[in-house]
Length: 90
Image (cartoon, rainbow, N blue to C red):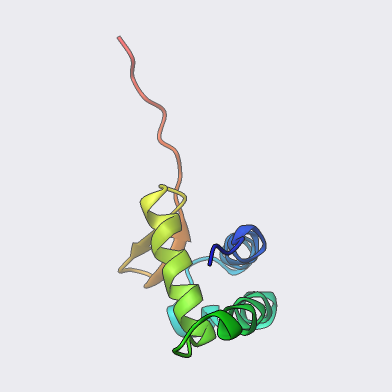
């Protein structure tokens, strides 16, 4: 089953933008948690195994990382938005 992750991605990016570097644990609140719970509930009838909301959040964090929109940093620790560095094209 294909899911639409647009709202969850927007909630994750908005959450990171509003508070800065955020840990995975602190990511699981508010609109992020609500959207993940909706996806988990929508997934349940079509699957033989339960997929908890935190797995949707984790998967989207990794997808956003691979897309270059966020990164994980060590100090201060947590997920943060990437800053696009200007390139020196010569």
